[in-house]
Length: 256
Ligand SMILES: Nc1ncnc2c1ncn2[C@@H]1O[C@H](COP(=O)(O)OP(=O)(O)OP(=O)(O)O)[C@@H](O)[C@H]1O
Ligand SMILES: [Mg+2]
Image 1: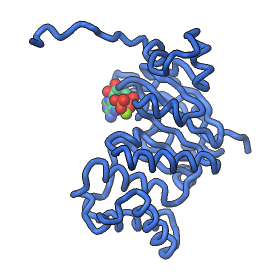
Image 2 (image 1 turned 30 degrees about the horizontal axis):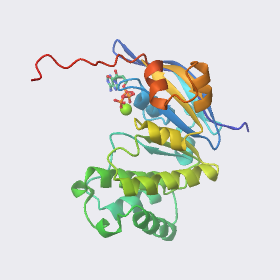
Image 3 (image 1 turned 90 degrees about the vertical axis):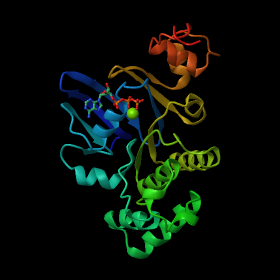
């Protein structure tokens, strides 16, 4: 088997007449902490959904840990954990029930599910709320419950769409430490975020997507070199330059 955890092969998605993702091809090596950046509407979530079989591509395919998504989705599902931005949680379950359900769905023995669920709830500071319905959870608590469910079967590849959004700084640190440890153990992390300093702290490699196409990929240093910006440019400078952002400096006309 090659060292590639994720291979995107010309992935495209067209919604009616709009091309959201445009013939995207890239590779992520096993064990990488890979950041996927881009402005709102760039196509990040659509790409994650196609890589994980949640959305059928208009054309193209993906291969996860050597398994082709179009051919054996069930095998792919067993290898991956996914945190989507819309969190499809079962809100009528308690946090604990939800984790037990998720673990059993992956075919883990009941005792093992219980043990892992207890550890995850504890780890993510949800232990006190384990008997509460997910419906009554705050946004950040829902995100943590969804993250726990994505981790319970010990996936080889983890896809996280804005995992830190809405999470308090203490839990944020817990989550990033956990993700870093997972990467050290050979788990591949593919995640999107708008928080650029998180990318600088965590990622080995990034790809920047704009209007459905990759405009840069590489280590942070490579991207800086590629774009011939000074080595001390912040990631934000590079990012703004790459997506040719039109940073407006004028006020809105009607603001007093
Ligand atoms: N189900 C859908 N039907 C129609 N258009 C869609 C659908 N989902 C996404 N799009 C469009 O595809 C484009 C890419 O959307 P996507 O959600 O992938 O962006 P994103 O990079 O995740 O943005 P954000 O940073 O805001 O989360 C957008 O123009 C969006 O309007
Ligand atoms: Mg998105």
